[in-house]
Image 1: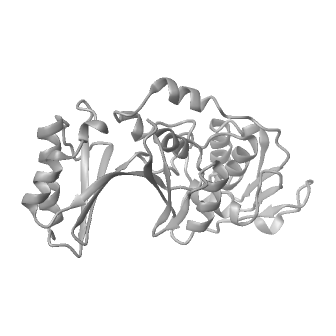
Image 2 (image 1 turned 90 degrees about the vertical axis):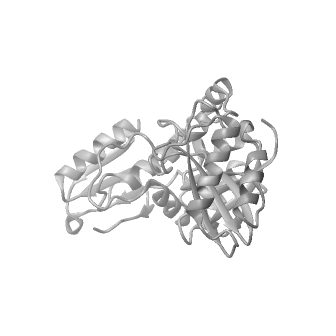
Image 3 (image 1 turned 120 degrees about the vertical axis):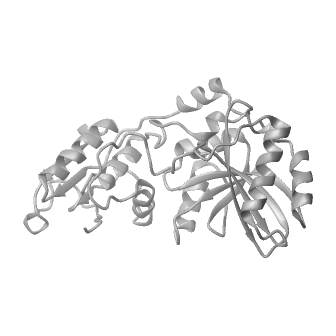
Length: 298
């Protein structure tokens, strides 16, 4: 449980430094920007906490290890010696996804077959193309690296939004954009074209101290390292805070307003946000302290 691992946070393009700021604030001081995201050293409980608490990460991957492999026979042999049982459960099927670049093993499909067979025959783990648990294999410059996707569905899926409008803003992007604008939970937030309510809902959740992943499950719950008791204890560590900000969402479409209201109530912030049917040309400044206007135009 306490073994140090490389943990990789997938970031939306060009927002790696914004995600880094959030990761450091959450208590991952060794975090640093790398290609495609943010990386830091941690243990399995850090993996759980990253999935549960980070608002801007797209996924959380764990580097399990790797080895050099010059050809398929060597890949097969070394895959059979890899300690799959330390990570995978025999009763939970997995899916293997492989990429290969600048390597003598150039056929990703053939590499996938060798790795799948090794895992199945040495650890008794089933292979399924529909499995939620995904092992990501990267072969680059003849070095094979294994990573596990600990999130499952992408982290913008918070678990409480059932109703979506056209071209919805992803929650992870909304959170990072709010952070870029200096939002800290205390300012007034106004969205003149709120659609399904993503910006005001994300802002209200953050202000209330709610964990973004509180309403969903994660792929790491199916790993050998998972501990139900410690996970339940971690989820109970949320510290509701006094909400100082005000939150407003407007849209010319009454249907969008209803969607936003439903989504906000499912997220337990419905009483904190004022949604109103209005066109942007008719808007008047709300009776609230000056704050942030943020919008995702259709």
